[in-house]
Image (cartoon, rainbow, N blue to C red; front, side, top):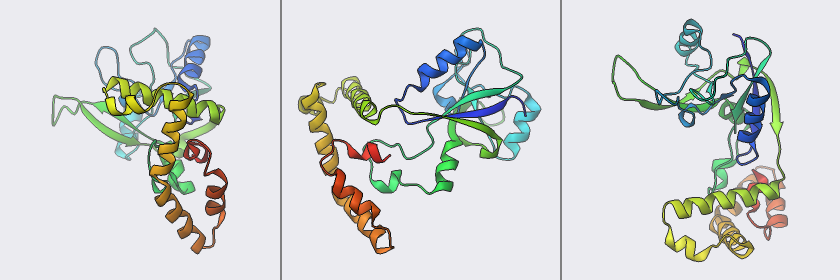
Length: 235
């Protein structure tokens, strides 16, 4: 179905939203996102599927394929392009923050499926009048192109820390705020504690891989053990 889709692949906090705003401004066309639950229509407060043709969308839904969605639904007056490619935001998988390696180590097939996964908010007239939030996934084969947006990993780590610090303030996590300030010392202490938190699980994970003939993880851990927030560099 037209328009054809092109993934905008990126690690979180890499400048994805800024890039998409630039594309919208330059073209006057909507861009898309896998994360319809984070891009609700300004009026209906629901996700708006990018494929406005109801038959196309229903055919996809019957096959268990839902998404992507308009990234700025009900916002500026823009149009859907009927030619070329539409940039579609995805972070794929393996980017969880503060998690053990089994959560961010994926096979190729698992990673691709995550690239086509997201969420949406909709109303099912036959079951409930209240909005329903659900996970979504579509067939990765409908993607025709991809753009890999890369930011310096070091800048990205600092940006993620600032985002985490925003969450500390927003949810009034006083114990964390007392330990970690926004300056260099707070960042390094946070990373040191984070490295220590999952050290045992990471070593066990690496040893298990070594027993199966893969000693690269163990060697990598030995090299980066003193690097702040080294998990993000791996991700």
